[in-house]
Length: 284
Image 1 (cartoon, rainbow, N blue to C red):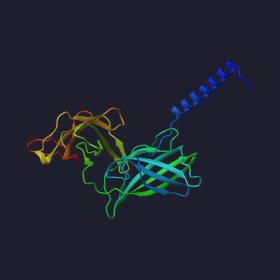
Image 2 (cartoon, rainbow, N blue to C red):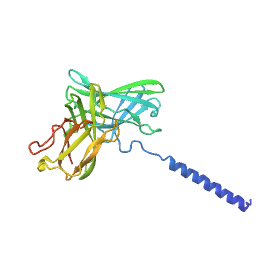
Image 3 (cartoon, rainbow, N blue to C red):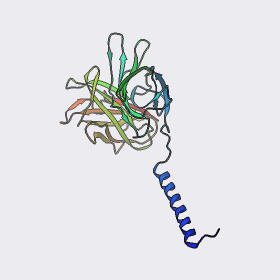
Image 4 (cartoon, rainbow, N blue to C red):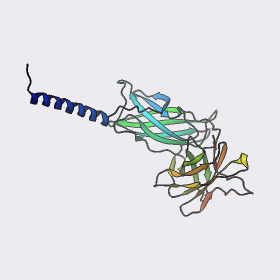
């Protein structure tokens, strides 16, 4: 069978076009691993679904926790992509119970299976008092719920503090970043919430978190180029700069100022006062 030159040219042109389309499609929709960099904390179930809880460390801790959730249908083995979630952490004490600061739960990717949020556990568990976490969710108009115990052990370093301000409001402050501090000027991130009641904690807007990092074991020296933490927008965490000039133990002394600049809690570090009453601790 003979082919004319125009037919051969047309054939090769079509082949190149199809290859180009496949290459373009591949570039637009790469295969990604949603769980990259995450470790599973635990699984828990109800009669319909298995819920998976993840974090970078594979644990939960006293203070700030950035968490991920997946919901697997136990009948089909498929992960739910169109759920609406909320959660309720609860500390069960001997004579009462209370919750903690928490975010809304949002979807990571439109076509993904991961849902994200944060919890700030301000109190550690003990032999008789413990945390549990209830997750409520809706899929296609049907409501579900599942509850599990959450491990919140004592921490070797202080990463969260709760106190009564001079305005008679109880606040919770939590250290968020840097998680891997370096001898450098680090990006600092801090959360500030006020207690509305025992189960409701709202993000504080417009305040200032003054910082004064010190090394108590090295003459209580400080560091240059620190920047106090402030919000970029209402409802957000507070960001600043934390200068760490050497490795070792650091106490990040704190002062909380309201929107008008009035001091609510914390004291300046002086010769006669080596530390603030509110602080975070780092060692690296």
